[in-house]
Length: 458
Image (cartoon, rainbow, N blue to C red; front, side):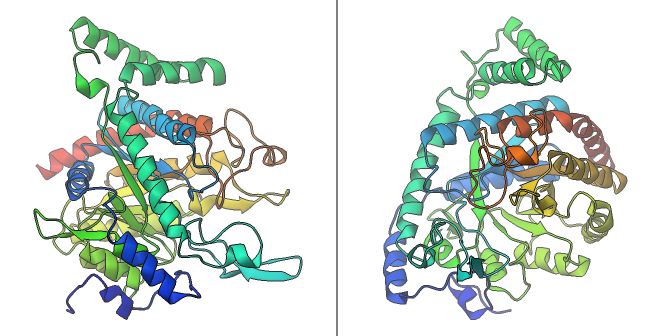
C-alpha cells in the first residue's frame, strides 16, 4: 500500500474540481490560507468522534442539518441564529422521543462547494460553466461571474470563521437554554399545528417540572443551558481542504481543521479517486453518501480504506435513495456491513433522492416524499436488526418556499414567493420541525430496537 501524504490525492483521478485559469493565483491564495488559524480544533473532532461512537452503540442519535450551499448574499447573523435554533428544536423533539442524547451537527460554516450534474449550463442559446458554489464562482449568468475565482476562498474562510464564532456563542452563552427551546416548540404547536403533537411537548413539560422540583434547572446546571454543536461540509474542494489540514501537536495526526466532520459525496466516492485518497489520511469523522449505484462489495472496500481499524465513530454511512427505492437498495448494504462486523453510523438523507421539477419550472421536493423516505429507512433498519442512527437534511431556519407540502400546505404555485436557495430546495423551519414530530413514533421504535441490539451484543 502506498504511503499517504498530504498531497498524495493529486496522483489519483479527481472529479468535480474547478478549473482555474490562473494556477499561480490559486497557489498564492492557498499558500496564504495554509497560514490562517484553524477553524476547528483536533480535540473537538475527537469529541465528536466519541459522541458518534455512542450512536454506533445505539446510545445516541445524530441530527445533521443546514444549508444545501451557503451563500455570501444570505450571510447574516439572524440566518445563522435561526438555523441553529431549529436544530435545537428538532433535537429536543428527537431526544424526548428516543430517550437518548442527540448529537448536533450543522451543514454550516464551510458548506459552499457543490458537485453539479453537468459542467456547463445553457440559457437562451448561451452556454457557460455551471455554478459550483460561492467559494468558486457566482450565480449570475455572465462570463465573468461563472469563471472560477481563487480569491473567493478568502471570503469563504472569513465567513466560516465568523459563523463559527457566533455558533460557539449561541451554544455556550445561554441561547440554547432547554426551557427556552421548549417554549419555542410550544409556540410552533399552538400557532402552526392547532395543538397537534402536544403529547410530546407535554412529556417534556412534565420532565422539566420534575427536574425543577428536584432543584435542577438551567440556573444551576450548565448542561441545561449549553450544548455541544459541531460543523460539517462535503470535502469537495480538495486544494482548500489540503490547505486547512494541519498536524495535531498533541498526537502527530492530520486533522482537516475546516470542519469537525467532512463527507464524501455520491459522485466522488470512487475507490481509486482523489477524494477517498485524501479522506483516508485525516482523522476527522468521515461521512460517505450511499446512493442507488453503490454496490455492497464496493461499500465494504470503502469502509476498509477509510476506517481500516474499524474505529467506532469514524464512519457515518448516509443513505440517499429516494422514498420508493429504500427497500430496494438499503437492505443489501446493511446485510453486508453487519456480516463484516463494521462499526458505522447509519444515517438517512431523505432530500437528494427526492428532487423533482415542478410544473412552474422550480426544482423542488415534496414534504411527503421526505417523510416517506425517513419512515422507510427506519422500517428497513428495524427489519434488518440494525440501528437507524441519524437524520441528514437540507434545511434552513428561514421561512422559505422551496419544498411543497407540510402544515403550511405550500403548493407549486407558492414556490416563487420565497425561493432563495443557491442550489437545491431546503425544508423551511416549520417543515423541518414538523418532520421531527412526524417521525417521533419511528424514533421510539428505533430506540427499542437499539436496546435489543445492545442486549444481544452484551
